[in-house]
Length: 117
Figure (cartoon, helix red, strand yellow):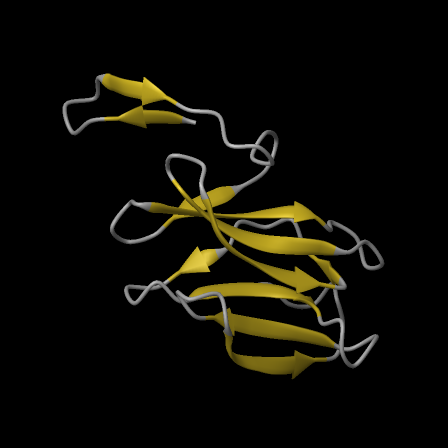
């Protein structure tokens, strides 16, 4: 990850395990990075992760599977993603994960290919 200041100059470069080749998004304040590990298929487990820009893990939310799209973050740092929950099996949902890593809500959908956050 390359951190660039407001003038466009490189401020520093950091490595966060799990980000290479993945989409990621920052919190509205820019101090947290949200990204997926694992997943990427209907039957492949994975996690949504939150880390500081220093690479320190804040929390991780486990899915039975998830898509590879970048998470979406709102102005309150709630994260919206699409995936399949570990309980009950074979059910797909749109999820809202709070800034603390806990589930705020989920909305059941009928097919994996028809929805994205």
